Length: 314
Image 1 (cartoon, rainbow, N blue to C red):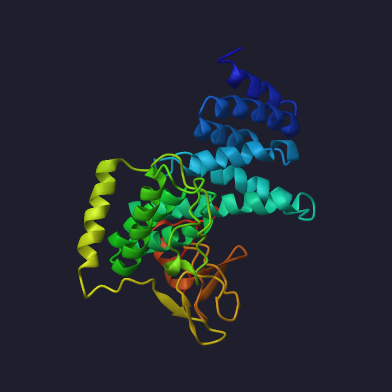
Image 2 (tube, rainbow, N blue to C red; image 1 turned 60 degrees about the vertical axis):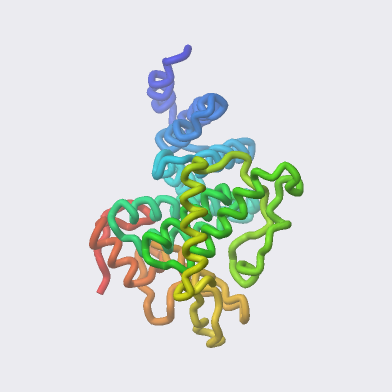
């Protein structure tokens, strides 16, 4: 009966983890259908998410809705928790359900970076927050494009990265205008000008969100800021670059794969940024850029991936 789920979960737990997980899915499905994706994620985090193909669509729908939410961290901790366990289980036999494993792994990475962005911001680590928000742009599709560009732009602005902020918020405004255009091409972003993103790993062919992430008043503030910055001759209006350690040429600063020589750098477990040569540290099998790892640990004292206690590395 309605309201008896606590007793159901207690009883199911005495019957073993498989039974507990089956009832978790039933409960999560009810909450998801009622529009409570964050509650559904919490249920799966607490009681288990079986790695059965019949449930993969549910998991992806819950992830999509949580990542479209407007409250930093709300549901994202639980989303990351159940996805981390699920992906870990599926990774033991990666040849089984390989396509679903790839999709769910992307949702996991997106949830991780969304949490890093929010937690770093709250801790005053504005540069770390900006990097995580920038890396999140790779996962447009897993989360709405307008949210991704808005948060990346604001995070870069707060960190003083005005060139990045300008490009991201200008893109955000283009998206919002396309969302409001009744003649937009089937709700797709493919017709937008993409010159700024051709040599990046940021998707530019995706479905436009149906609902705006922020209110019109906030969108108007962004328009005013972008317009003012566009007239500032001292601000570069292009994305930053890094020097590829393999070919020695410039590529997009946040790209893990160099667009020129296709060499792939290690991805920082904190920010998602590529790790420069000679700056890598390891923690529980995951690489991180030493400077960003230490900034995070000195403030938050945890491994950002697992949430367990962690220390700086010197």
